[in-house]
Image 1: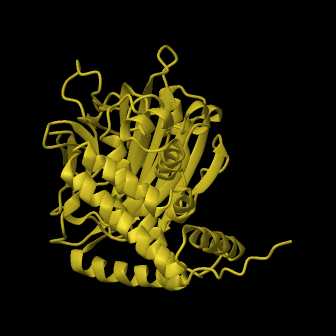
Image 2: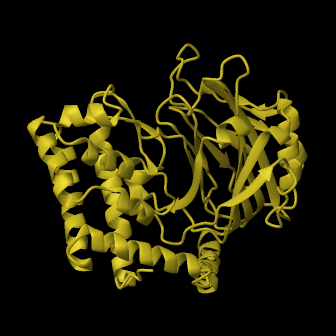
Length: 432
């Protein structure tokens, strides 16, 4: 047996390698995305760029590798020489300058990483493999207690500054392909503000949900929000009264430009905590199994300060078996939400992908729970009625929960103003 003498990575090298991998996946992914649509396979990319198929194969596998930790994608990339052939080809083809410069910067950082680890890609890969083995062996470390205590301290300070707090913020998502058209899906979402307490003069609570990326009912790409239940509702959000404080607090919901801000009147004083749960559905929207961006994004911005945050997703089994799930938290600041569809300067629809916002990802990563099929594990101490809400949503749709696979993340004392994003990658496999 041959024993490796290559040492693992230091903490600094590990974080640098992770950022380098994220940078490569983002910049080279954007470069490949700018190629003509027909350049989807290794052979065609090779012919289009004028570089060898092995380099193209590793390039595509590195960019498209569906890893929750970017470190695990880094060994799939070609070496520095091969990557420089790619950027040289982009210059020869006179591709967009910003794409070329971004890719060249990522490749330069990759070269510096290799020099720092030992001078060759083989030594870097060996160090990454040794580091991965060590990470798996110590998967339970480090103890997150100190991080949780610091988030709790931040909650206490924000609660005093804003004069409001939430016990739990909840978002539930369900996706099912249409029986008559598997290229389209029905979507159900529910949003809960649980245990809202306010003091006189508090900061108004105004969570914003982003729904539509189409313009009209006639637009085949439109996501038109509809109330989940007819009756007492404020368009386009349906009030799920059995989960709300009665009488429910006064609120206003308006839709414009695909955004639905929900304003709860800050001047109303209450003697206790208030619960508000609303539901929305979308009929026959394009399925991520076959339509770009080949991903489903389920996000919730921490509108607290809150003691807990829950994101729960139920994917039909036909979707779950073809997806890779991940969950992260992002500092969105002035750059906006990750995963939204935006318009480029030329008017084209562009998705702000998680891998392109690696520089906004918080290091304190949420935990992804796999709950399995059905409703057996959907109950949680973070909100005692979570199981009842999930059952109600399935009943309203007439769907069988045993046909769905459930995923969840529960975050205690979430970072106020951060976006918590659960994503499901249905990306293309690399083909010859």
